[in-house]
Length: 512
Ligand code: FAD
Ligand code: DLZ
Ligand code: SF4
Image (cartoon, rainbow, N blue to C red; front, side, top):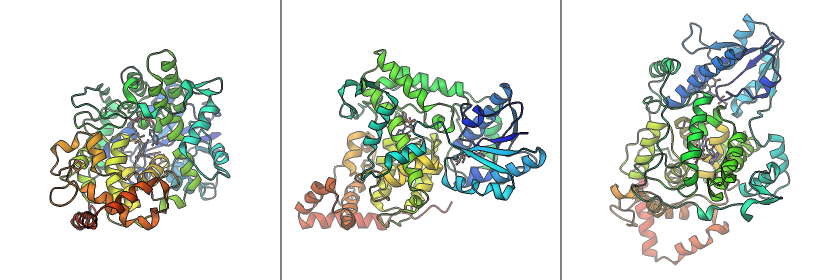
């Protein structure tokens, strides 16, 4: 062969440069199910099933369009322990002049691949991942010499660069951001569109059997399994969102309801991240729907911002700051992540609902991740590495390039505010306002301290008080600290005592 084209489990796109420059007559494609990739954290069973099934379907799609594909299954007679071994073994059976691979989405793998050329004694070409809307050198250029790295600045830059939602050089509607019109709580009884539930085909059934045998001790429920595993199925999910979800997306973006786990969210992150959907195509189609008059601008803008703005921005930050980023711990937080993150067994109704949903679906929407599980981990001072490993394990869309900046930067403020200008810390009041979780909780969200009070209330003040030396110069927290200072001493002591009592009774880490 001329080239061996290695495709990773989250690179399932025929539009990648390795295919564009490839030649089905002379190149061989390699996909490999690898124990190491499937267990470097205890990924949710649904995530592994999704990745393996999507890989097998992609191999089939490539073969149908004329590519020769070598596919190594986890249950083959000679499974491979690592990606390097998969490449070495394939090369031993089928000589190739060079190995070509798209840059992976995680630093650990990129670092490893940099050593392959000398270890395997073959030329290894790492090609940039062309699925993103901001190439990494362009992000670096944007970041160079900047004092502040706000997402909003980057987003405006991307709007101008791409021309999305622009009119004669100005933002459509005269404003860059329509968030003021978004973010209402959801009325109880709201009925949202049902997600499309795909029926597992034979390939998926095989994978489900494999996962239930090999990964029984991993997090979460394997079935019912209804994720899309092909481009066509993922396309149907997005189409259904355009028709039924987009018009209300912005309005209820931050709401949380016990009975509606998906609300008006698109549920496309895992397909985008694995390569079954294309980010540019998604943005262009959302813009088109707005231009057709079918949805208001605030919805289209709010949605495009998530993809053109946030998604590209966190990726840029990840590659700008790694590998040191992973070890940042601004607050010096070192508490074990409580066991109930892995089981859902807690009497705090909000955490229970979000963790149980995560166990069932390998999905939670942004505000559930940020303001319930993330907020609690921040307030109790949980060890950022343990929190990071939890988020990387439990969501079907989790890869380090997107998960780490969201967890360590946005949620835990462990990077000292590089990514977000203030910690997303909130008391029970926020959860009470944006959800219906509090109505059947063992705690009273209105009660501030003492027996039966919502733990978030005291933890919130304890967090601010404990970390004051680190946060005192943050001008966005000035009014909050002056409220604290205006409280009577008795009240402050009651808060700190309540929080102290709660923290000392928290369960330890999961021993699993
Ligand atoms: P929608 O609400 O419908 O949003 C549309 C799309 O916008 C998403 O599919 C996603 O591609 C993009 N998007 C929205 N917010 C973000 C964001 N903050 N960063 C990057 N992309 C965004 N997203 C992941 O894809 N993988 C992760 O591992 C991940 N980990 C997270 C961890 C924490 C602590 C937090 C707070 C957020 C995390 N997010 C992650 C971002 C966000 O929660 C998910 O992208 C979103 O919930 C996916 O659901 P959806 O497709 O229904 O999104
Ligand atoms: C997530 C994942 C899993 C569970 N399994 C595999 C695998 O067996 N083979 C593979 O090539 N990729 C897998 N992946 C995706 C990789 O973990 C992902 O490519 C890297 O983390 C880089 O983003
Ligand atoms: Fe969560 Fe507090 Fe509400 Fe209970 S009362 S659901 S702990 S916010």
